[in-house]
Image (cartoon, rainbow over all chains, first blue to last red; front, side, top):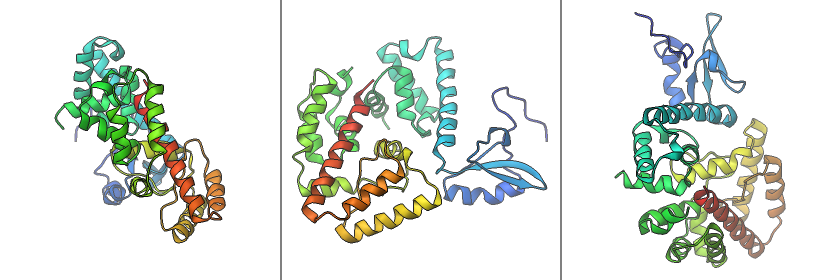
Length: 140
Length: 163
């Protein structure tokens, strides 16, 4: 299989087809945990060792500091990407554009992250209520 | 900054308010006094309305709160608030066990979930408060619960509307 193109922002991703990981996947879904790449592991993550090598870490939902900062990191990237696309800091968008920004972020899964409403509101310079209000207007 | 809240459709305002406190009478009182000139005036109305909650209102609102030490699941606004509030509660095995036992003792004693405004509290502080409240008689404890609910509602409302 061809090597994935190296992406500077993502260290060696987790291989979901690894026998150990595919065996653990259903369990992880049940406990709402997730795999993290060895390079992204924090102190609270559980290392999964296979043949003497750490193939991934498990991040459990009950480890908030690591999980939260990771989530904010990924969400932060979504916000940065959107600002790059639009060519302006999100906080400087006009009202209608902020509404559109919320819609785009929702389409990109931004609101599945923890602390998402808070983080998005901060980036846009609006209250959380405003974010909810926009979300409710997108017809969901 | 309150423009959105002041002008939002009634249903949107109501559902956001119910995520702060799941008492329809309270949400309606806060919603129906819009528009507000500033955040303090919203909190003022919310505070007064929260002091008028009936026992039935409190019971219903309690049902929307997960047990202390149990993580709120899901994407809802209230779940997000709950996780933030409980983020200071450590989740190591001993603490979980102590909270589990404490919750159980409380539920046996009072027939409802132990509610505390957990923002800024450590697990030890929560456990100490729980043990102290177990000594209360029912009317005293009912008043404490209503007070905790009011504090939670106001903190959530401030977070919701502040920029």
